[in-house]
Length: 89
Image (cartoon, rainbow, N blue to C red; front, top):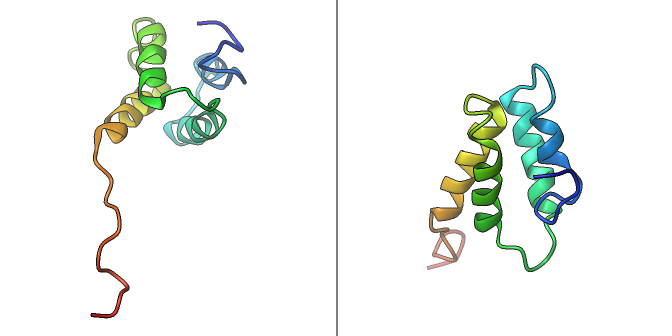
């Protein structure tokens, strides 16, 4: 991966892996910014998988690796839609 590539146009993930002492909370914030700035048409699950392939080998214990893994797990979880909550019966 390089800075400003198609999966990381702002270089956020790239830079996060280079920050000494970065915390998991800071990585979560960076991840959210990254996710919100993904170009339209890019599948977030595929992008996360590719980012993990690129960075996980060299940074297995990095907080951003942990956040990316959590993000990948969250994309696999089905989301609840609609329902009865808040509606009159």
